[in-house]
Image (cartoon, rainbow, N blue to C red; front, side, top):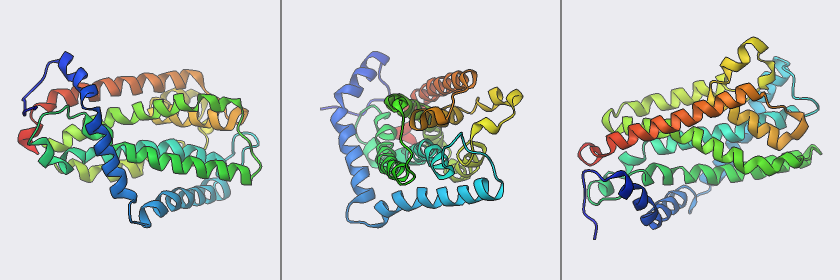
Length: 271
């Protein structure tokens, strides 16, 4: 039987992640069940939210601002393909940020790698993502637009989106344990981020002299990658900016994990 421990060596910690894989599955299943079991709103929200956002962005950016799409890609599909990774990113961020506080009773009693808690909370976001992906395929079929062979790279970009999400999520999760008012800033940051990321428009409209710097936002590379894999030749990858996004995402993952591990030993006392 495991007891509460202040810290673990790196070697034991990473092996314990595998040892406690059943706990990860239990927590993930619990979060999904709470979200969807015996409720209509949970399932409906996963469908209504992206569709409503797509309509609003299509009207604002496509009809009123008259921003161009990528080639012959219908504007609603361009928007929805950008919303997929954005909602995955924002959902992991919001779900993980309060996960340690919500599991305070568990954290204060037994030892297990605390990384399991925010990671399992992000599974709900992946379930929503799967629903949204099915909606996108239905929308593409409605418009008669078919994905190209680039779609085989979609799992790679999904992994990229998860990495880009987990880095800041781990940092904010650990920060939220120490400073509880951090959670109030997260909805504002997410709302602000959707407008500075190329969700409702193509990143190709960014002037060439600014596009590399714009791509330092890792979500830009994630969205461009999704559009390239889902829309094929209708969307092109700006490789210097894409590589920059990958570099920033990897750095944020390293720093978020480092900060989380450094703060982890005090979680039991603070929650």
